Image (tube, rainbow, N blue to C red; front, top):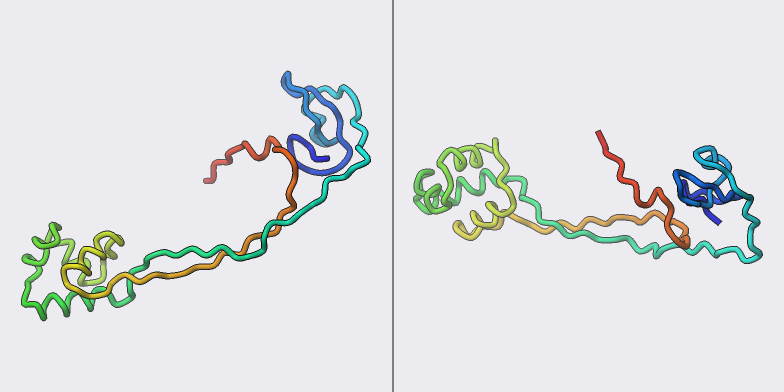
Length: 151
């Protein structure tokens, strides 16, 4: 059986913590008033692990030489930066920064530029995430409901 507060297995105590009766380990029992010791049952839960197949994530990324591709294609079409900015419905300074490589356009804008110039600026990238094996447990612990703010 697992502690309702921290999730650790072991000997549990029926304890009243802030008006709520919980089954907690010896360490967590110090946060409340111990009522009784919980005797372990004869049947132990089996610890099954999740599927070990890696999860894949497909995302769009901008090609590395986007600035040069945009500038060359715009010039080959005979457009100056001002005309191109009007077609994009963006400021001319945005086009200047993109072409100089000082500003990486968001994926939405990159796709818009790709459509207008008929070049490929966005490519799909597949990333695989290995799942960490975790034993499956019955029920929830208080730790499952706590949100920790990161600095």
